[in-house]
Length: 87
Image (cartoon, rainbow, N blue to C red):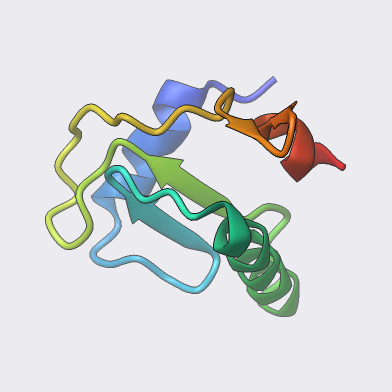
């Protein structure tokens, strides 16, 4: 199993975000996140990466670790948002 803390630390050390990983501090748009994740995963596949990442709690640009108010358990259309992503 991947150590998530180690993975995030590796990503923030990279000089800039790339098409297969993005940082967000608090961004939440239920209608767009699914499409955004799809675009990240398509780019990862094209580049031969095994995974794509959308990481909350990291400032874009500076890669500073910050807290986030994003909650994947938020109720959207009667279901937890995280369940909609897994569907």
